[in-house]
Length: 258
Image (tube, rainbow, N blue to C red; front, side, top):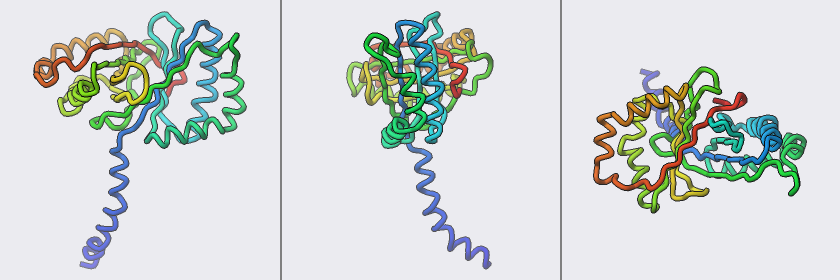
């Protein structure tokens, strides 16, 4: 009886403490996708050295984990993709400032990423900010195994003609069950996100992962033939909500977290 009484007394306090933690765990993350563009191999080498030896360890020292770094699958060295998760926009701003002020950036970053108009470290660098979908609020680093150079990480961007149509497509992923179907078919999605700042808006982006190109093709064939998808795409509410799809086939670098 004494144990029961104490439990009843402590239960409200326990719920008061644990409730904010539960809510925090369910909050939607934000993602920064850096895309570096290159004109020659010297630029690739300099920027990769900066990303591997300054940016990643510097952010990890600040508590940022699950950073993905990817290259195009095509025989091309023209781009490098860096995907960084944050718990909030405030963390995005504060961690970037802290990194710029860090010793590793001052010593290593400044050396690698510095340059001049005649010898720049890259052609251009763009940043895309995304907010995770509510039905997958937290990133899931890929569990795909095997040689990294064989893997296919498929980054898709769905553009819509208006913000209302984009909201409709996002609803199709969440309430409509598209995320659930991807999960059931084993697409190993890393994230789904609405672009809140970047080119090609209004648009959403997501990243799915496969062991190789054959596996990728088989998964998409199963998706297209799925009765669930055929029923979903025929719903009048979801018609015409995507105007353009961009697909990028990537693979993780050896120093990528996944």
